[in-house]
Length: 337
Ligand code: BGC
Image (cartoon, rainbow, N blue to C red):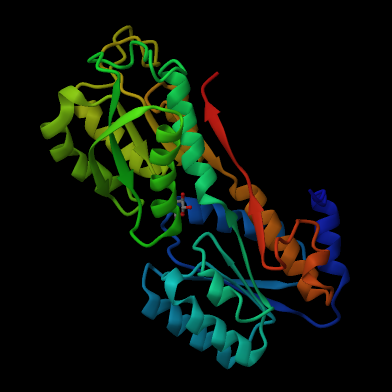
């Protein structure tokens, strides 16, 4: 593992390496997405005080809009681009464009296919391994149910030895929804836990969509529901909001915290660990989250960008560049104390 540069050194690296003004463009798939917004704000604040100019574009969930923004930028080309593609499966065409202009690209959060990244040695990816996120969610729930698949504790409400659950999924074709979902189920199975999927719903990472779709799920399965795995915290929050309306998560003694011994509590685990989720964990509605370490991801992006802009080799970045292509950050669990 490489040691991370302290912030001051990072700023020095970005300042020390250029004569003229260099420009960097950041293309976001959707600035309204809370996770992406946090990551992008972190990139901007790390960038402050450097001699580079940073322009941020919001793709508003449309690849057409993002393509236009890229075309516009290419008329007055920047020195490096940081891209959160709307359609990660369409990254090939984007890479070709940047390759033609010889502008290095760092993708993040929405992972291009390996074969697309491999077509050029000046494009990179920064993100977290979705497998690990799903595995940690499964582990948190196995622990909560007592850690022994043959003797589930009181959270197995109907005492049938099986976890009855719902999975709330993000966007289809996003690696994080496909792989996190798969790994939750795989990990439970590997450890010998019987899991009955009552239903899986797609809420595209969004709180409102999860809130709306949970209504039908609760009508159909309310009495049997024992656990909810959500691909991110925002959708978990939407589910909690709907469930509160139906009498779950009550704070009977009014102390500001939901007591999980209360019958109306159901464990829900999310992913990301943004401040709103931490508040929900502290108030007892959200059981736990898996931190998707956006701070380290932002540092890795800025560090790699600074290394490239200063004319050094990408693998001289202080973050480990796996296979010469990707920087991976770890996920880690977060439960209330
Ligand atoms: C995050 C989601 C986010 C998505 C956007 C995922 O890694 O967990 O919260 O909406 O990325 O691409």
